[in-house]
Length: 354
Ligand SMILES: Nc1ncnc2c1ncn2[C@@H]1O[C@H](COP(=O)(O)OP(=O)(O)OP(=O)(O)O)[C@@H](O)[C@H]1O
Picture 1 (cartoon, rainbow, N blue to C red):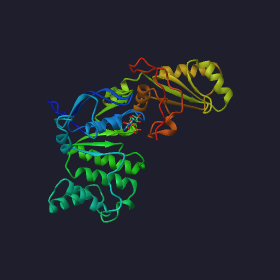
Picture 2 (cartoon, helix red, strand yellow):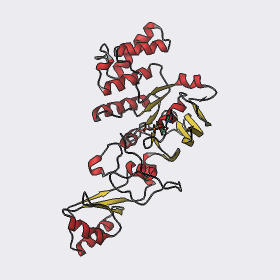
Picture 3 (cartoon, protein in one colour):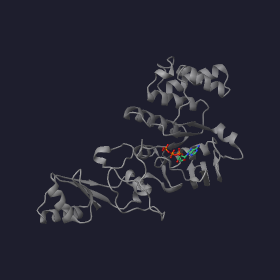
Picture 4 (cartoon, rainbow, N blue to C red):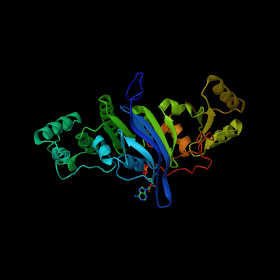
């Protein structure tokens, strides 16, 4: 479900546009020609395996580091020619929080107001408003080090909002948070976008991108492997699969022989058969099992989702979502053969997420 809803005849201006961004560390090319076009007032989610270069891209766009090549404009300012213009228009919360744990949440906010040269009274008003908006009023006078992970993340965002940024970069904002805190942050992000802010989000959680983002890009091998709405990306992946689980190894092996082209997991005694999940295909599978005199203990139909897109585009292997729903991607099964990525080089399975 995208966060912003727009039916305007005129496309909104671009909050971020980038062409051919490149960055290497020594002989390690991290970004190899990245193009981006992010409309103002939308949520853009950048997905990619560990080490794909998501944080590097955020750092370049927020002018914390420079690109080796390419061009980008953020809030209408060129990142090379006008980094101060970019910085004045954006807020960034990274994986490493700006929160000072030794002082209170309120003091952190007032410090931020000082940094933005807000007059004392104005600074106190804005700090109080944002603490209220992010549900931190009760904890405002407590040292930030006593906050939970979710509260610290909310304080970090509140501090970022002191400067009223038009564009906010959230680098893995919900990593390590429990589901309740994650949902609270999603709600905050939706409210931000409803008030006109553009959100550029990196995430390890595909469900997060699915829930929040108007557009999603998958970064892999230094390039944007695919970009579009969640539905557009899901349409890139052909079909889904049927998963069959068997009670014993004998039935499992006979079924593997009878069905032919399957992805096998001998430990879990499961077989995955590429399928569109239609009644006709289910009948065909069951007929073949029936003919061989085998009964499956469990049959589940799986239609493509954002996880499949991610695994297909990044060459990672797919997890068994019956047990890992909504978790960061982790490998557990061999991957199906259909891969729409354009690179001619074989993709190695990437390291599992944290
Ligand atoms: N300052 C640096 N010096 C050398 N290599 C770096 C530096 N910063 C990042 N890298 C390398 O660049 C690559 C991309 O790192 P980056 O942090 O941008 O990836 P990421 O997609 O954000 O990963 P994660 O999901 O794990 O946060 C990694 O291989 C990383 O080791």
